[in-house]
Image (cartoon, rainbow over all chains, first blue to last red; front, side, top):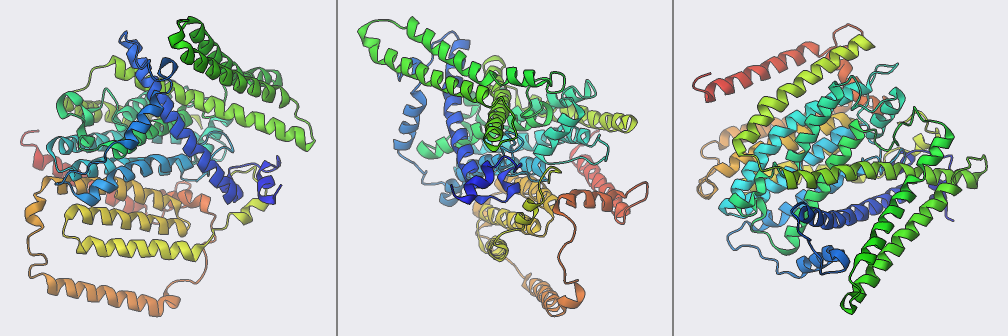
Length: 436
Length: 187
């Protein structure tokens, strides 16, 4: 194999492609992450419709594919074929550029998200600053879209959204700072802003920051968890697109592909902020109890979780096949679902083989590579699992809570979250000084 | 940079295609700046200003100052420009775009431009003497720490900019209080 491929598969090289200076692998990672996020957005779209439907005792999409599994693909085709309308009175250039700004801001942050100790495109030493800064550019897309539409509802939506995002960013930033303060509680006394460095600090201190200085870490985490819902304009903070008042808010005038870019940006931003929360407070890629249960046997047991998850998914699909009507009308759907179950089962078997094969950590290169591959899969699995919990929470919030009124929303942001996060920051600093 | 990294990788971390990126970013910044003052539509001007600010952030990155670049994006591109757009959207653009611009202010503008040009020319001619001709020797990863030491001092001693920093934050506090008092009739 060419040298540049081997350079990164070599088990002696550690670190991200950005650190190793490997442009080839950086590009591959960018491609994998872009595809993965797009697929995750489609899956999320299906899951949201299904879960919301079940919350409301409905069935949700059932027609396109078994249990509506192909519905996101049908939606994507519909959106691409739809006529792309630019209103005659709209500002052509700004209308065209607004979805691009939102999408670029949402996807650029993925360069620093650490899926594992070496599974990130790059490890910037200003990682968390970069993420907060670039994700705050997303509001520009919304503001410009609302203004460019030259229409009342989008303008009101954009104004509400920008006011809301600017207010909640303050509380969010202070909560993040109190987590960053905790990274400096080591021998040298210097903290880090790097995303990988933050997870490593939790590893060294042997505690996820959500449990650090209980309940300080927990309060900061809760403030971030509230602010991140407001930051992504999701229910119950979706004032920007409150359909009962503003039709669809800032993207009322958008249609077809351009509208789907906003959709993609919103979901990509949701995954991105969930990743920040997981990295800062929930130990990033680490499995549960890495310090308490640190024997190789525990490592071995925990490495079966990815395979077990996929076996579980396959089992759910098989139950679906068994429960489906045996009428000939449903034959194609049953076969399709059975094939889906088989694919999930195949992935599970593959993961099982990797878990068993990567067991031995020998000195020889082949076994070292296998072990490293297994570790990589474990890291990505735990990270994605934690993020997936947040994504489900987003759906749950939407199904459960009524929408805030705008003045209530502002009051919560400025008069509740901001003072609490300031207080937590000060107390964290004091406790940190006392402890060290 | 992680401590566990092998030394061979440090060499590879040297920036690639530096002149290309410098000219790209500098060109973007200048083009954005020209667009800001030539567009009749205020929102287009604001968008061009965002391009300029982001290009300047890229230039800070090339100067091994990642922290400054991050703050530039958060404060200027993310914070101040959103407020700019917020205000611009609330004024009547239809009327203001038909107003005659630079009304009788052009002699002042010309004077300021000439002064700036003279400054640039003098910096270009005497630059070798004014600025030391060497690369930044500090590692990129300690940029944040260096700034912290300059602003807050180290080991109980005040840094060179501690006083200026505190005065600036006091000034901002006064501005915030002023804004609150101006908007609130009754506190």
